[in-house]
Length: 123
Image (cartoon, rainbow, N blue to C red):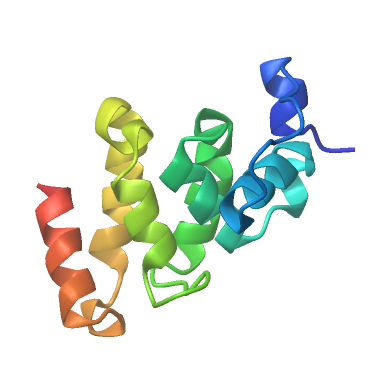
């Protein structure tokens, strides 16, 4: 069976006091095997910096196949979550691989706002 964020971190979060959808989603995705995480759960993990260091390879695999994937809200939402992340900013090798995905993508697949933000984050 695939590891979970909890097993990789060696840390189990206590049950949440606040039961918002985001909090419950964050807690649940930490317990889910990595190979069962959905693109939407990856988007949340990168946005909230929850185990994202362990998820870079999985996110990269998905984005190499479809950089414009619509994980929940709009085409390119997973890509933007990754590009806004600490991992993208701090890991030069990961950043270069994500930029390769961006460069191969058809920018017509993205809306104007998404395209502009990708351009700004790309640097």
